[in-house]
Image 1 (cartoon, helix red, strand yellow):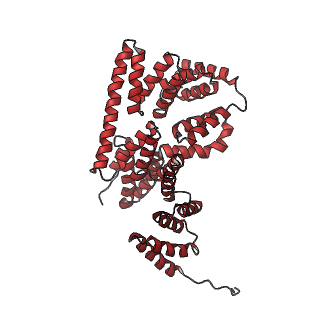
Image 2 (cartoon, helix red, strand yellow; image 1 turned 135 degrees about the vertical axis):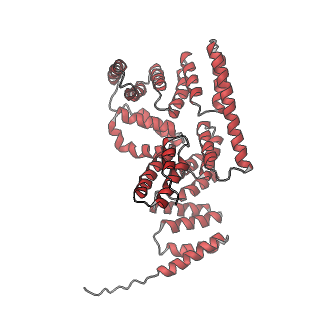
Image 3 (cartoon, one colour; image 1 turned 30 degrees about the horizontal axis):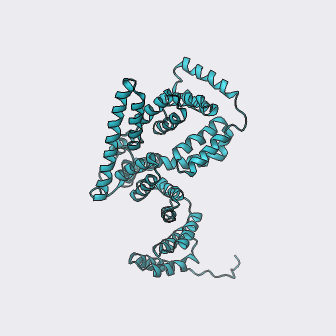
Length: 394
C-alpha cells in the first residue's frame, strides 16, 4: 500500500475536553464563555448537537437572530428529534408570529408529546388565538404530563378546565331539555355557550350541528359537524350528516368524500352499502381532473392557521377524489398526523422494542419501553393494560 502524503491528527480528546468545559460554563450561567468554546468546535465538528448548543448560548444571551441561525443549521443536519424546534417556537413567539411558533412547537411535540412545557406553550398560544378546541386539548395534555402536580399554577389550570367542563355539561343538559320541547333557538343558544367552554365535547358539537342543519343554516352546521368528526372520525351519524350538509351547500366533492368514508362502516349492511355506491356514481359525474384543487387550497389555509384537524380532513379529501395526489400530499398528511396524535406512533415503536427485549429476557430495557407506553397511553386503554402486564420486577 502506498504511503499517504497526508497526516490526520486525532483531536478527539481535545474536543471532548472543550465540550466538557463548555457544558460546565453553560450550567454555571457563563453563556459567553460557553459560546466561545462551542464556536471553536463548530469549525471542526459537523454536528447538529454543537450547532444546537451554539444556538442555546445565543438564546440565553438574547441574541435571537444568531440563535435562530444556528438552530436552523442544527435542523439542516438532523431533522428528526431535534430540540431546536422548541427554541425556534420560543423565538417566533417573541416575534409575535404565533402561527409559526405553533408549527415549531407542534414539531417538537410530535417527537416528545410528554414535554409539559411544549404542551403548555401550545395550550396558551392557541387560547390567545381563540382556538379553544386545540387549546383545551393541550391544557389536558399538560395536566396529564406535568411532573409537579402540586404547584399553584397546575392547580389553577386544573380547576379552570374542570369548571369549563362542568359549565359545558350544564348547558348541554339545558339544550337537551329545550330541544325536547321544540325550543330550537334556546337549545342553540345554550349549546353555543356550552361549546365555548367544552369545545372538544362530541355530543355538544354533534347536537349543535344537527340543530343548525334543521334550521337550514348549513354553513354553521358544517363547522360543528366537522369538529365532531375530528373528535370521532368513525361516527356514522356525523359522516351521514356531513354528507347531507355538503350536498345542500353544493359541495359535491365534499359529500362524495364523506360517503367514501362511510362505505367501510356499512359494509355488513348490503342495502345501505349499495345505496351509497349508487349515490357515489351519481356524484362522480360532476368531477373533473381538477376537482381536488379546492380541497387542497382549503387544506393549505387550515394548515397555515394551525388548524391541523381540518387541514387533515381536506388533504385526505384530495386523495379520496384523486389518488394521484398521494405522491405530493402523503408526507404532509403523515406530518399532520404526528402533530395530532404522536402518542400512537411512539406507543407502536415502544411495543416493538419492548417486546423484543422482553423475549430475550432483558427486562430492564423492556421495562423502560413499557413504562413509556404507560406514560403516553390512556390508563383505561388496552395499550396501557398490556404494557403494565409485561412489567417485570428486576
